Image (cartoon, rainbow, N blue to C red; front, side, top):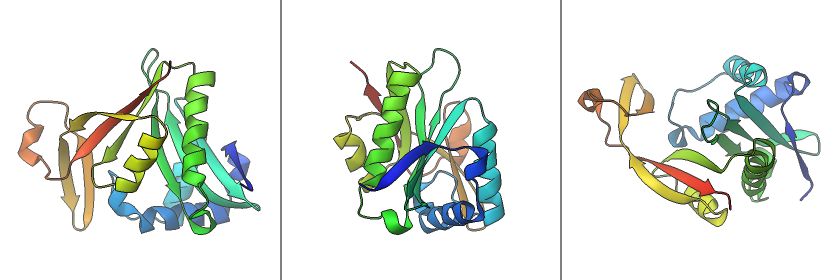
Length: 183
């Protein structure tokens, strides 16, 4: 394929990487639960927090020295299954199966390193490309999720509605929970 996937280290956080992450996210806001545009500075803070967070693993795919995508694994509390998060590709990665390889890397990491029995993920229901990718990698849709929506101007934010009372701000947007069980 010509690209490498590495767990993110603090030395990997360069101005070029933070610029790429900001561009990718802003170009694909409609697929994120938090649809607030980001700056290069907020992208750098996001990446630095991922490196420091002991409950998550964050990997970046590189092609010819340039970043082409990333994915996160949230390990969660002891005994809970990990969740994949923040899968995105951009720039020179489009059409090069980087998303598939990043997801396969995260699945293998969850199974072989974390030793999880399964791995899950949440996605907005209109993200059809992601659904196809997840199906191809063995995931199955487990449930539809109700969403709580907050909005400040054009910045929409969705969170999973798991308690009573959040129906007051129920969103028409739908989300889904998918899972891959390791055999």
